[in-house]
Length: 216
Image 1 (cartoon, one colour):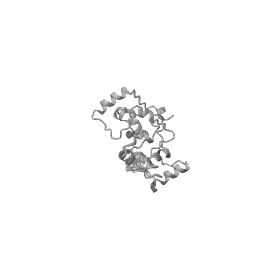
Image 2 (cartoon, rainbow, N blue to C red; image 1 turned 45 degrees about the horizontal axis):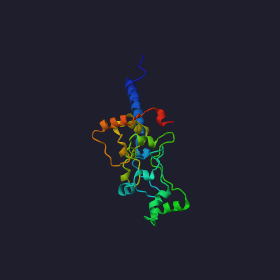
Image 3 (cartoon, rainbow, N blue to C red; image 1 turned 90 degrees about the vertical axis):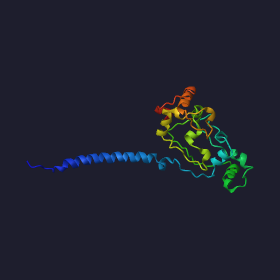
Image 4 (cartoon, one colour; image 1 turned 120 degrees about the vertical axis):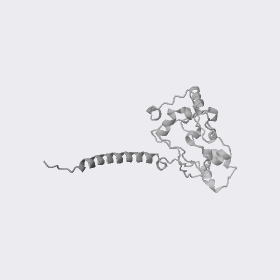
């Protein structure tokens, strides 16, 4: 009986199957990389606000502590945003006629809150508690980056699940003494793993990776 298919058909079939699998794997890899890119995560992208508030000026220049504005960070899950009254504590006397701060004065006069664009905005299905992380020795800059160097705030890290799990799996790499939690210039120590493990034990850190820790 005559051969129906040419001998090259077997080779073409194998190459086609291998090529299809390679294209599928490449497509998945590209989608994962795209999902991690700053285009999606907005990491490293400074956000324009209704008032050009500079953390670099207020924190690094004037030495204002994080807790002066973010008053709830140590006690609740939400760090809190300062009211216009907090801003006007200084700006009723300093730069009180600056056109740049007219939105702040208008907010104060009308008792209408300023509209801020959230930079570190987690999905609604993710639970995050600022207070527990601070009490366990995780510094502000671990998640937020060196905000004291940011004229306009940007997201330093992706804040995706992969990034969070990296810390929960090895908290000793990131934990610091509690007295340095609010210190933006505290540096990772040469003996960080040794120090971190001691603090993990001292602070009784149980950084679970169970789904229900964050997805409640």
